[in-house]
Length: 177
Image (tube, rainbow, N blue to C red; front, side, top):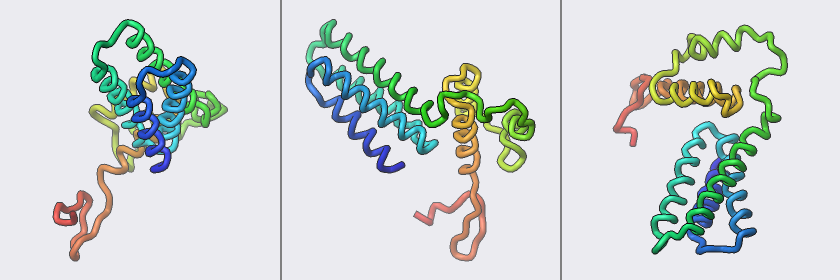
């Protein structure tokens, strides 16, 4: 996952640092950036933070251009569109472009856990993560199992059993660092 994140960041910075390049090279760079971002998101749930970084790097590139012309802005819009499409395709591919987490419709336990907040073990997803996951779920923007995994990863990292200097806890200690 670290390698994929590094590749994604490198591709974003490479694309943002390029002067106006030929149209085929722009498309190739945009696809490579989108695939790297999509692989990062598909491989690691916390990889979703890469997408805003990609948008920010392109925005910085556009703002650093001396006098953005209409052609430059059109090419930047096209680069964003191609990168987003490649990212979505790359995220959906490991799930065989299927939204449902199961190939059959009868899986009441899993659906019950999803609807009740990932089961009683970790509680219910709340706040901004809940808004983002529910937004994507309601519109079927990402595979259901990926969204479930993202919610589960967020909830399961809120508290962990920890031990330091003979003390047990679930929140950790600042003195650890």
